[in-house]
Image 1 (cartoon, one colour):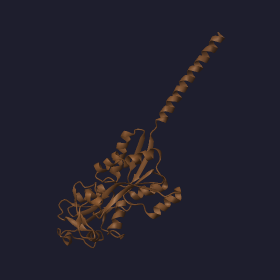
Image 2 (cartoon, rainbow, N blue to C red; image 1 turned 45 degrees about the vertical axis):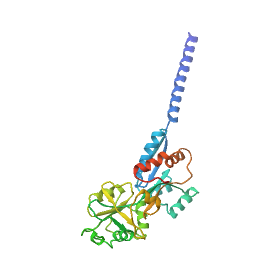
Image 3 (cartoon, rainbow, N blue to C red; image 1 turned 120 degrees about the vertical axis):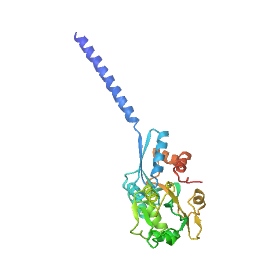
Amino acid sequence: MASFLANGLILSAIALMAVGCGGAERKEKKEGSKKQVITQKGSDTMILLGQQWAEKFGAANPDIQVQVTGGGSGTGISSLINGTTDLCNSSRPMKDQEKAQIKQKFGADPVEIPVAKDALSVYVNEANKIESLTLEQLYGIYTANITNWKELGGADAKIIVYGRENSSGTYEYFKDHVLKKEDFAPETQTLSGTAAVVNAVSKDANGIGYGGAAFSKGIREVKVAGPDGTPVAPTKENVYAGTYPLARDLYIYLHQQPTGHIKQYIDWILGPEGQSVVTNVGYYPIKQ
């Protein structure tokens, strides 16, 4: 009887060990299947583009999850400096002082990757008859030296000026290239995101705003004349030809050279599939 009980106990122990091992194996497999996560933060101009990249890439690579958030280029760059995001989307080049902060913290210069081209567009309401504006006229409008549309050949109506928040790369680009680094007029109504600017101008017959080429529903993009005085439309052809005066690159920044699943994602963005997303969203591939 004692021998039988002992054998029974041994068999029970073996059975329990088998169940335990199986549970551990299942747990290990479950943990082993955990997705790799890439965080991507920054430009609101690029938020739709980033979301589309993440969705398409994730569908083709189910073991990798890309989490995309906005907040503006400046916010994304600050997060990259702080080490709280893997990738930063930016609609402007990184400033020297920002690059210096990256180098001080991580021991190397940041990695800059142009991923798309954009024509920073000037929006007016569809009812506005103005066809083109010069850079000097835009400077006058956004510094409140020009305040009525009749000064530009339009209706006798006050110009209502819309712009972006100062964390925006588009704000910085416009300030550098149109306002010659001067401040925006206090009357400028600051909005968070290009979509909000487009929405405001689409509802305001006297409004004017600016933003990425992919955001043009419900408004009209005017031609912009550079120093030679020739009005140029924000088209793909003019961006590639270098004739549109407010053409720019859109960037992804990293604090080190990409490796592993992050390199896989970047390579995909720069490849045919990622660049087709650029076109579908409304921007232009980095290479013609």
